[in-house]
Length: 116
Length: 110
Image 1: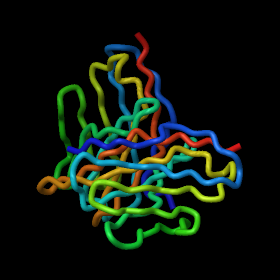
Image 2 (image 1 turned 90 degrees about the vertical axis):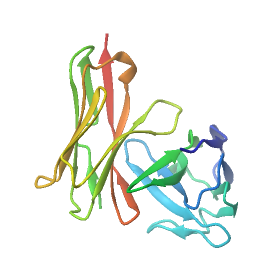
Image 3 (image 1 turned 180 degrees about the vertical axis):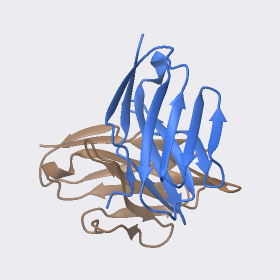
Image 4 (image 1 turned 180 degrees about the horizontal axis):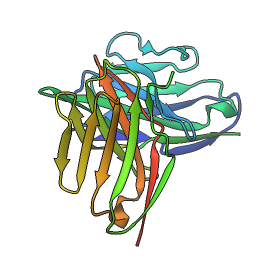
């Protein structure tokens, strides 16, 4: 298993500003991910945070809008840049733990972002 | 392109009765399926999983059924308890690509 600390837990931000979300894992993990859950929507993968190299973004997400850092195997940040009300969402970091055939994702507690 | 669908956004059940949450998927390459449970202000937590080589997996009050021909899985909770009230996400995985449904909010009434 993995214990993930994510902060802030919530924030209210002004349009045009940026927010950086931090994710700390209690053990070294190879794969870390950032998800977004918009109201009434499924969990959508934003990007895979790669240690020591640029993040891998999913279709519809770009580095300029969601820059990601992964300085080591236990920590990552996601920045939501130049925010607009459409960015209001829950942002979740997650790590993959593989045990035999089975893989599981463990999630942080999420960041509830509201953009005014 | 929503490959995993949970068509019921909400479900209300009486305590002690069975809760059945449903999930449909479109990608036949999915070979591993999971259910996650999410309480307010918390991240989703893993509940139970099933691989495509099985059609049933049971863990205490929770049972997941997989019907590959119908591309359908379901989560049964019996007996349901008020503490089971949460949002339940279905997930399907293939080649390290995991997709989630939109979730079903379960309310178990005392």
